[in-house]
Image 1 (cartoon, rainbow, N blue to C red):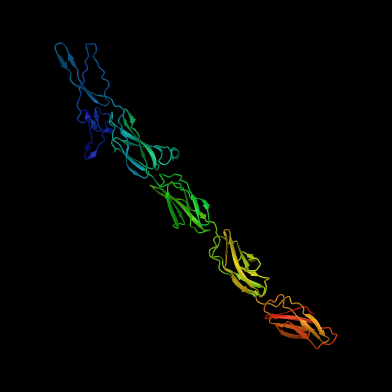
Image 2 (image 1 turned 180 degrees about the vertical axis):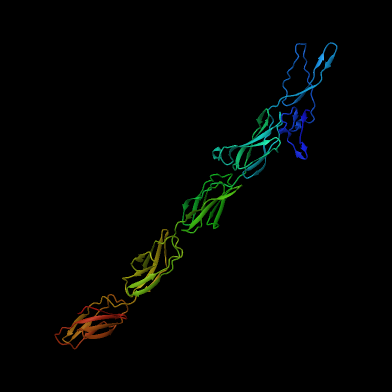
Amino acid sequence: FGGCLRNILINNSMIDLSSQYSAAHLVSFAGCPLGDLGQTCTDSIVSIDGELNNNLTDQALNPFVGYLYKIISFNSVGNTSSNWITTRTASDAPTGIPTAEAVMQISDSITVVWNVPVYPNGLISGYTITAVPIRPTWGDTNDLLHNLSASINVTASQELRAVFSSLQLSTIYSFTVTAYTDAGSNTGPENQIYTLEGPPEGVLPPIVTDVTTNSLSFSWSDPLRPNGNITNFTLQLNDSLFTVTVPGFQLTYTVSSLVSFTPYQVTLTACTLGGCVTSNITVATTLPSAPDGLAAPNVTALGARTILISWQPPTMPNGVITLCQVVRVFTGGDVAPEEILQNTTELMALLTGLEANTLYTLQVICYNDGGSTRSPTVDTFTPEDVPEGIAAPMLIVINSTAVNVTWTFPQVPNGQIVEYRLIQDLTEQFTFSFTVMQYVSGGLEPFTMHTYIIQACTRVGCGSSDPS
């Protein structure tokens, strides 16, 4: 029997006769090639003269094909024919091997199918499907994780399908099909198929390139392995406080309208059609700016020459407060507009050595590395004190029994003068209204030494002059 068998079922079970009877002569257990249907035999006659030749070599035949031969002998009377004999050419390596075609792609997996060779040239014993990485779709051969090829062997009786998994993402692979007979093998043309894109790998945090009091500028690089075309980057500050998405080709961005001297947690997310990956967190802090929100200080007079002043820190320090100054503010006149009374890093100051019964307009100035802010001014009077700078009274002898005594206003009254006291010879005292500046001391003994002391008095006490 010479022919071909296909889809042999015994008790509803498929039988692979090719594995058991691969040496059967003139029988193809792989099935009849579709191209053989409807074919008929073609006669070919070769004429040989005389009796010298009794053999013939038939050449240019096709491999693994059955042929029928018979001999027709002629003489002058007629001819006669021999019986037909059958033979078949030997197997050869298959030709006309089709390409592998992708029918399913999932992440790093590709499923390919293929057809039987156009010219099997023998009994097909099996196939080897090979996938060789060429380059990533987003880079060159230097970006390949490895150059290792993957191969899958399939027997002739199995479904002509192979599943390649754990391939490199977004990478072009060259797929080839190699078909085998007992006489050899051939490999069909390559078909380039690329794996699907996946989430990027190696997404690094953004780098801070410029900082102001209210803005942060960032730059970043492409992921170490994009695993596809980067469609967009998303820059995020403090989770969802600020989020901006830019195209995949943009590698810089400036975030404005931020709060000064504030740390921000920043992440960068890179996306492909295969997914997104977020970088680790980096922290960037805006520069300090001038403080704001410094309230008026509290002022307490502890004495005629001592004031305790205290204040609250600025509600918006906008940085680290490095110094506070207590200043006295002047208005009008030829003096400087302000006088620094004390520098401190505390929230209070004790001002000493002040002038009694004096208006002090006080203000607090607080500084950081970005500038300064001023509180509202506060007016306070130091309490009264005893007068100072009282000149000795002036004496003019009127006659042998009377002396005219006059005095002047204290150089430093330290309050409102309410009265004057004149002390004569350390024993007698005369009290006068603050408007009286003169007294005639009469009834004295002639040619007698007398001493006079003038006292100026405020509500808190009296100060004395030197004696005259």
